[in-house]
Length: 375
Ligand code: DP6
Image (cartoon, rainbow, N blue to C red; front, side, top):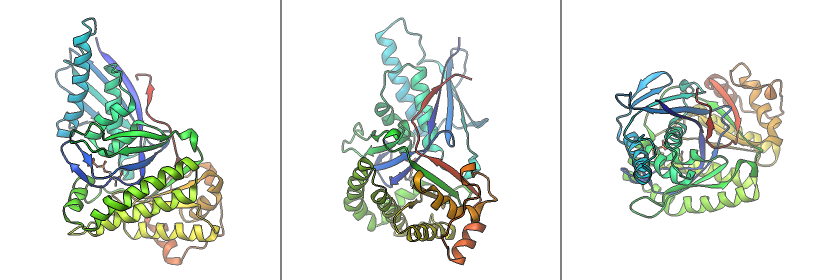
């Protein structure tokens, strides 16, 4: 007999960034963070977990390719999940002995890996959730976030939809370093995200190693974790509660700038943003200036892709400004076709964006992991 469960999990993009570990083994962060979960219609991982006494070893197929399950972080997730299943089995002898069986994990993304988007958050969230469902663990998303966190920090936030905080916690055992829902997607469903893909290349310095170099060498980082992030977390929670886009946008942009400043203050320095990223910053500023108010916010992770948050009511302004530059690219949906705006970008900004962006993804806030029919 083969036992199976399937689930999807979303991508999330932080508006207050996680950057720094206080414990690399348990993957405990130096600061709390907050993210927006993006719609799974555009970006998601689908994972089927199965187990059987007939399986000889644990296997992971990622986008059709055999993939390594031996890493310490993946092993930590598998061990935690098996321990929880074994505890259930020891209490109820009628349960099938799944914890002792080998696992087959089949995982697929609905977006090209070549889009240069970090997929580890959706990947670990889907893996943990699929196995938890297979094992019928009575665990809440917050409880599962403690396991997903050990796979990849940002993955803990992908167990929820909407607006999600990862509370850094203070315990040495990490049991209070977990994700919680700040607000469901339905609280502020008008939030949209336009992703300008500036590089399909794998990032130069991985986040895992980059953040450890920052912790070890940056003085600015000390101020970020002691002062900047705690303030940004509070302002961001208030902005989301009040659905105050101008406040949301300012904190988002300031926090991205602060994170990239600590990267530049790392010794030797780390540069994730490039000329295309900086042109996107200028473009967002030009859009806001033309609108006479803040209608768009940029943020950048550990790579050059720009994520631009905006509200549905302002889509003509934002998409209209970028569409004429990028209309030949994949990813535009019908809603953006033919939009024109009166925003004038600098010639240098226009030409950098036109030549540098290779793909666009139009998406928005979305729901958390969904159980699906086994395929
Ligand atoms: C810049 O979650 O990829 O995207 O815990 O080492 O796997 P590990 O790091 P990861 O780091 C994400 C960093 C970030 C900011 C964020 O998502 O909060």
